Length: 233
Image: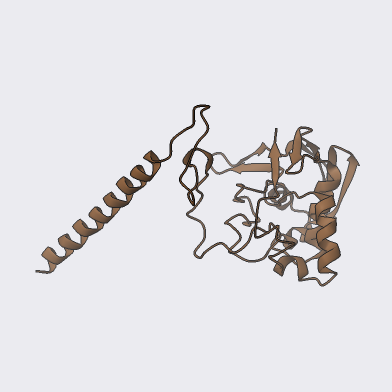
């Protein structure tokens, strides 16, 4: 009898799964294209060809977009480590789990010279508003992690300074007393880069409380609304 019930339960689960798959297929079929090839969708739905579905990370509903928040409900993006997710905000380099190497993204190259890591930036990166990303944006993104308590603050246990050599070169000086090159490299694939001009406006709103940036999830509506991340041209 127990075996029969178990088999019935499995069969029911399979039917539910099949219904979900076919139901999704029917929904996708209702999304057509216009004469010019653009996707169309019924009111209140999202055009399938223009929508990215991203899941499998959070245990609860998303409540904001902030790349600096210590919350674990930030669209699944704030891993702040080498597994950083990047559907909206991006890091300088991307860590590949398959080979353990870092690959260029917002940054192009990185080289060690003693205890200093020099990063050359991608000159073709622009923020959501069309402004070019430069070294000052990278430096400020690191400094915010030092000024405020965020999920990325711990990297400063290994960093002495982050400076801009020129518009497209950043130098991260490691702490001589706690030199750990792997932690420095983890930061370049774990910290999100944001625009300094935009973040200056945020800082003006939130003040100097150490926890203000890490805990505020509604910055002028930006973190709970549309993306204000980077894009590479």
